[in-house]
Image (cartoon, rainbow, N blue to C red; front, side, top):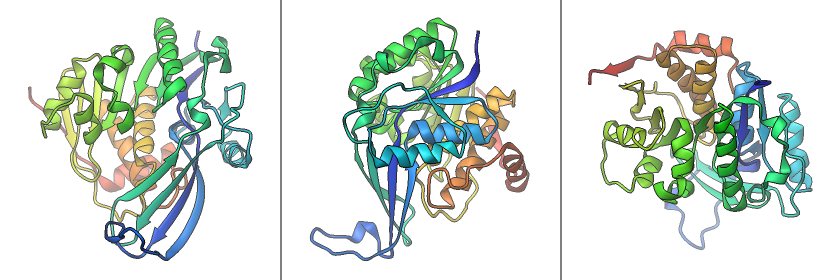
Length: 320
């Protein structure tokens, strides 16, 4: 029935990374800021997650729409390094998505400017159903026409017993539960950060333990809430779990969420315990944040196991 493990649905983006030596938060309107380094890499939820899963030995394809331009050529060239197939049949007349990511050598976080283009144009005519025979669909953030298509895809795939992992962005979380309910009800695993979780449920609670339980009641069997370098909380099979990521030198945080989520899913597909799958996701994301580029230092399964042994991450199971 299934011919591969995961179909990653989402965006494909060309990321341009600017690194500056002053605090981004100190920049005022009209300032001229010297950029110390510039790098260009492919990004976007579909390509990031797809590459991470492939690197971990999971049979993966992606579904993302790009334009007919040099940026699409650049992305496709990078995808070839991972033998990652895009099952989208057509290109958009709009430009491929682009992003400018500005970070400082003196601050941990970053500012991202994103131009959405071709990734918004995915329709049901851009793929054939026989290409959807995956055990899992990794649903990244989609917008406009692509989001409507994504909802139809989830409904169809769920009916075929394909499991759904949903990893929404903040602007998708802002659409709220009523709009996203069809996806949430079909979702097996929901992964999002704390701000996205609070926004989705329109709540003010600061407790991740409370948030995971609220989100579980909306349909997802497993809920994971990340919080950067702070405590991560998860709900799985009636239990609440938490872990504190090890402290590492952070160079760039772009792509960390995709690396974590792909690692978690890879672990579960490979029959890891839930605790071990969480650790696999964490070490994958830690590797990414220590370098520029969302795919630059993704781990193989063997490398991840070595990192797990090195960091000795403690996962706590809470008594209900």
